[in-house]
Length: 262
Image (cartoon, rainbow, N blue to C red; front, top):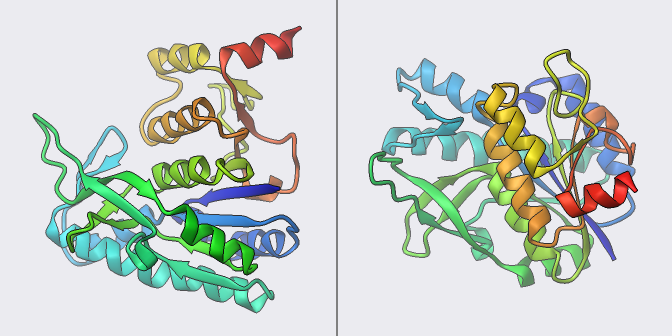
C-alpha cells in the first residue's frame, strides 16, 4: 500500500490562503498520509517579542531552556492545533501529536565537542505500531517536532529529520513517498530554474559552489539519508504542486540516475 509523509514548513502555515489551498489538497488525497510540520519562523518571532536571542549554526537552531519553552508552545500548541483545526473543517480526521504523545518519537540529546546545542534532540526511534494504528483507523497524524528522551526531558528536533525517520519507519510496511513542501518550486539553480533530479555528486558540487547553503542543507541531508535507507521516492516541491507527480526536485542515488540516463 502507498503512503505519503509530507513535511511542511512554518512559513507556509503563516500564509493563510496558501495553507487553505494545501489543506484542500490534503482533503482530496485517497492514500494514507502523515504530516510533519516545522514552525521556525513563528518560534523566532515569539522569541524576539520575549527578548530571547536566537542562535543558528549551519541552519540548525541551538535550543537553551527558554527557547525550548517557546518551541514547545509554538510547535505543539499554536501551529499544530491550527493545522489540525483547518483539516477537521475539511472533513479530514486529523490528530495532532508531538513526539512524546503515545511515545511516538524518542530522541537523544545532541552531543557536540565544540558546540553546546542545548535541548536539541536527534531522532533515535519512531514507533511503527503507533503510526500503523492511526493510519488503519483512517486518522491523519499531524506531528510537531517536539520529541523526548524517554526520561522526562523534552527536546527540540529538526522537523525534516523527523519526517525522514517517519518515512523510513513506515517504509517497512508501505511504499512511501517523502515530500518536503516549502516556498520554492524545488531546489533551484542560481538562475532560478528547478533542478529536476539531484544526485549525491551534484549535491556536493552545488554545496561547494555555494548554490545550496544554510537551511537547505539539513533538509537535503535528510532527503538523501531517506532514499539511501529504502524510502521509495523523495521530492522537494511547492505546496501548490502536491498533486503533480512529476513536479519539483526528485532526490535520487547515482545508480538511479544512470538508469534514467539510459
